[in-house]
Length: 418
Image (tube, rainbow, N blue to C red; front, side, top):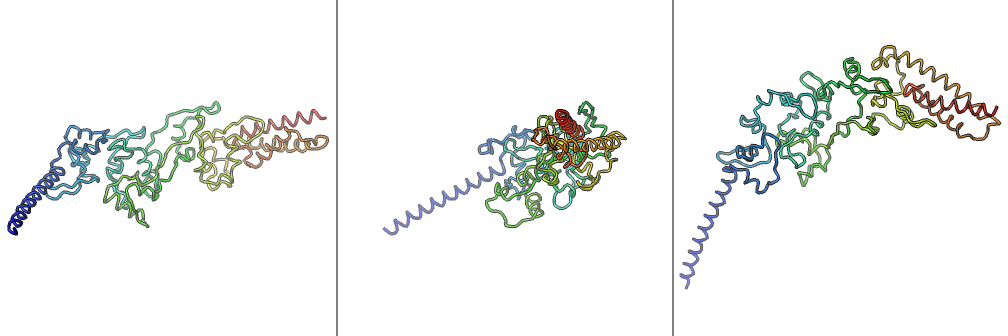
């Protein structure tokens, strides 16, 4: 009985051993085939069926390039290990995008100046070296390998004082990406020629086009959870760049919040973005309203051309906002001699303010003690213009119209009661 059981156990053990060996061979063969002999993208496509392309990598569909040709970053003998990371060496191989071919010609992107790869493959200070996947990556799930303007904004508007071109120009300098603007605009029946102001060279873009950057590209902990279940308690930017860029070739976009580079428009006009102003708006609310041509009584709103052009306050107030503006500053943007014209207009406004003050004093004396809505409007306009303190410089036409309306109404009231 014991011997019979022993024979059965031997047979069973032998069968199990044979089955185990066969299973190991099959598994090993399958693994070997999976990671070393995959020559058709359809194999990966069984799981990753949503992969689409929008560039030369479309060749992958025909089988010329396999997934493992790009997504393998560690080779040991005949065994290739699959990985999500992609190294520059795979991207810039001769069968794909060689550096020589990439540097041969420029590329038009999003209406900017000609883009060249050669200017973006430079080693920047620290460990901010750019990789191919820094710009080309799966950003929104729509394309497997795409370039997005958000990526450009992150590099060009974060720590821009630290990153310079080989000519030592800040990478945030407008002319690096934007061509000269050959455009004319009609403002109050006057022709504004943009190219003229560019050629002068004494007016920077930021003096007119300010607050065109929304967002700071900060990294918040919530972004980390997109990839990680747990994250470090303390971390520094150099450490994160070392891990994610140098070691794992991660794109910048998933980590940094979006930076939007555009102007704010209302009713077709480009307006200043109040939230991004570099000063406390509550301290200069009246000045802002005067420039915007709003807040007065009795006349329609009328923004100043400087407001329409989103003129930055620092364009005139070079040191600080409360500082006195040198009249010659006007000639940087306007024709020579405009400073004298403005001085004359400011002098005129000052005289009309004195007249309005006299009329208000008379209109508030007996027998005109009863409150009159026009007197109330005129008084409101007087103190509104006085609080602005620019004698019309912030919006001379609007201020003059407010004064003329108020003076006319008070004059009629006084004539009627004499």
